[in-house]
Image (cartoon, rainbow, N blue to C red; front, side, top):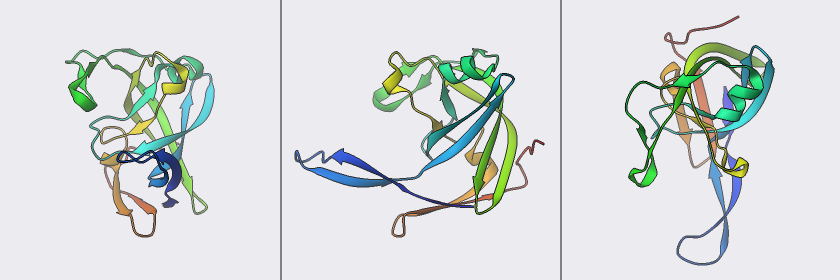
Length: 151
């Protein structure tokens, strides 16, 4: 499956100029007992976990509980408390669909505009061989034999 990077307009950190940054953001559909929703998620090799907004669990009817382990450490060393639940995820590209079940994490963002989907190792990248082609702006994902396929 091949996904083009998505252009994001950003302010350059060393000036006040705007620039276009290409990011490996892809559509992922999440299934719950109350329905489905498609989100744009950042494929992040630096994230241990796949993290969705708590509002997604509430809207889709995905039961969640607070994770029993220590808080997650995010950028800047901040610690956040995550919730965990089982979800079914699906990718579609190139006339192909891949659906699997996984335990994923949820975070209660304070502001709706801050809600982000992070596709990290657990629940996502662990199930794929990923090739990030920055020059061409393409992400290629190939399912590996660890993928817990769902029907």
